[in-house]
Length: 236
Image 1 (tube, rainbow, N blue to C red):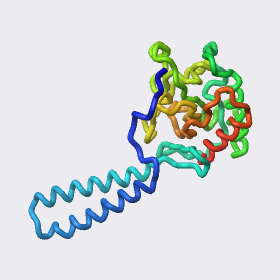
Image 2: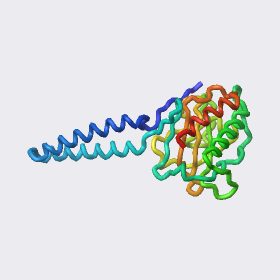
Image 3: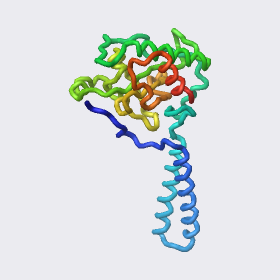
Image 4: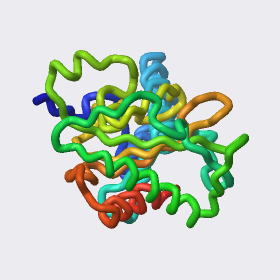
């Protein structure tokens, strides 16, 4: 069996680390400014490098992963996403577009439980399900481990990989160019529940929340699933 681990984009999982980095760079830059009066062009070039580091540190603060107060839940969003202003939603796919094909150990009821829990959580947050012109589209997935030969045979979804959603018959295809810290579904720990909000006009990912290894039992009942969904959507 192949088990995927994070090997994709590097990002800061704790905003405090970014703040410490920024403070260090600022202090070093001030020292560079002091010596600029007394040194040569070589010092000037060194200072420019420090300033460039300052800019990068500032940018890192804007792309920090938000950690929910709930254990193990995280989220990321694009700079222009405004989840609290969205009022209506629809599913990216109202039903699986392909025939479900669950492997041994994976229950079809998990799909029903996740969909139900997400809809209930959205309603609690003031979202209303819409049949036309929704503000956002919603999709979910769960990372799984699978045999290497199965993984090689399933390549129709770049950026998603073979997953529980794929077994359930979903075939997602949306972009993520502006999403800081993005990684594909098959790079998450097995059992990680991932919930996405997508712009229906641009077909681009706006917000992603996940609970690392939140669903280790794929036959979990509704109560367990509901708790994980609530954690994931805590920062929405």
